[in-house]
Image 1: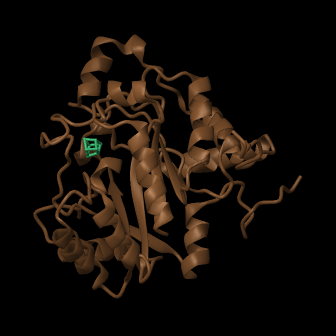
Image 2: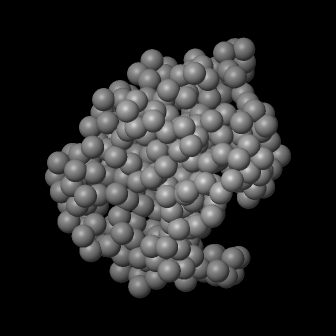
Length: 317
Ligand code: SF4
């Protein structure tokens, strides 16, 4: 059966690569930037020590270093991708490390404009916490997004306050809902980041969470399996009580992801279905696979089960 996909390509989920191709007429590469921000859950404003799973060092590419200016990081990032992939000529600057709206508005304006000054940079992805935006910042980003492609990527991680408390997020789900709705109300594109397999969450809760997320005004969504990073608070918890964690192997994870995707709002663009932490950083790395191979296996699974994103989406939930 060939399902009626609500998009103009034949993949069984709303893929980020295809979305960018349709939007910009070609491949677009994201350039990760560490602009030297910190995070209120680390500097004491909200908490100290951060979320229990967090270690940003595990996620930064080599060209991404806060001691270098935004311009230098972009130049080096473009060069890196030109040599390595030779496919992209358009770039999105991805303000990735820590909380990238956690600064006075003039600082934000200067940093974002520095990135947008490159003709190859056609937009920004701004990763942040829901409690690091306010009316002033959102009004500013709403104005900016009238001129260039802007998306605010919110760390949602979980819809459950019991989980957010356990992982020391320092905010509740009501804050997340507020930030996403206020952004969308102003016409700013919004993305969400979820962690699948956080301790204490049952499979049924994870699937119900999909219904909650599906009702939010999100444009894009990114899923990561729980990865426990060396040296984090969560790594200590895992080493002391591994029985509290349900670490999924690749096959079980992809089956769960299939059920999530079947229930997911078909309008959402799926940016990733899994994360990739370099093995030296990972305490629990259960898969010895690159992301491309994981994605290929996932698409084969959807094909085998003749299923697709939104097959069981229920907008009334
Ligand atoms: S909000 Fe982000 S940067 Fe801050 S501690 Fe949590 S995961 Fe780390």
